[in-house]
Length: 276
Image (cartoon, rainbow, N blue to C red; front, side, top):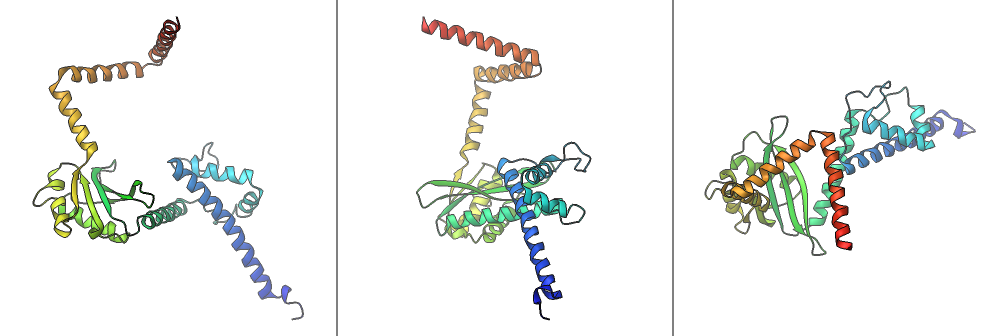
């Protein structure tokens, strides 16, 4: 009663503050690891993350690297080495990734503000045989620069126009974006996308007549190259010979080294001729 600092409530509060500080140190280290891996586009996990593994893959190895070069992190990780509070589980990694994604999208939506925007949509099947479509927005920021940002990817069971429109509305509503603020839509030339009566383009134009459709320029370029290659035998043979050369040289280290040596000799010969 005379010394409140040594009472049970006081000791409990001081211990609680200490635990909070240590947890914050470990959480900051885990967030730094996730930010680095996300920025570099690297994988998080591997097939063997046990303590006996020589390579525990990127996340755990970077976490250990931070602890090795930071005494504060090293002390905290050593204190919780035998507990469940390590912040290294796959669930924790995913939660931090989702939090980083939410903060990034929040910044993008803040940058868009009340500006007009356009959408670019494309769908394809991934390696898990699931049909997914990706959506990106294009807008002009406060500095007058055209910005293009990816805002989401969504799994769809069907690729008809009605299903795709509902998925687009769901993503836009999630980020407080309205179709009435749209001024452009870009897709490929598939019938479910650019159909004049029942395509995705037509369904969005029914809600907003100011959303002009633009055929994706990347897809136009691809179709143009395919058409040229089919109708001109010289271009067709060029691509065929280029593919054969790459396959032949790329399959052998000796051939690759020989080509590099030949290229260097030719470069020095041309350089010598130019000097003389």
